[in-house]
Length: 251
Image (cartoon, rainbow, N blue to C red; front, side, top):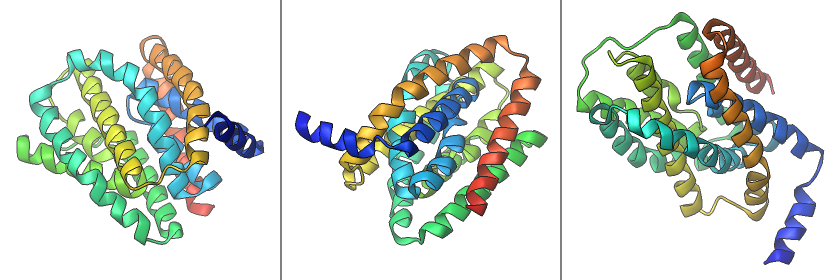
């Protein structure tokens, strides 16, 4: 088994891996600060580098592992009566969304990813929030949409984020809920990838290699959440997301 790992490592250690390291570091930085934005950065840029299916596998491995330490801390502050129905729905919806991934043209998927990222950036920029009813059914709908989009395109955070940000909870509690959604949806995505036998040895080795980079980036981003001026880092994050969306649209 070690010989197979060594052979796979040799095959994947190419110039593109250094670009993957840079993407993982940037995704970790945004993930640590926002609690959810890592996928918005990683998926479109990795899709340009490796294609959407491989990008989904890499994101499933590294983003889930990078999210776990943040999630363990966030669990204590999460509003579980509101977030719980969202989590149940998204876990059901992720495998359904993945079915579409295997039957749609990769170019179409890239366009969906690009539009999703740009739309999410515009929503965050203008501070639009959901102002409709709040109950378990609406929570499940937002969570289900989040899960379906994640399974299909790797980018499903915006529906759940917009719904959570509309609550009357404090910023810390809102961020904790967003973090728990991110951790759970990445875990469901990873489980679906394993179930559908998507994770080739090359994807697993690349995922293992980029995970520490993303973990470090997430720790730095989390520190910046408490230390950096909110408006400055928010502006940087939005420009990063917009760049990622436009890049995948024109690639």
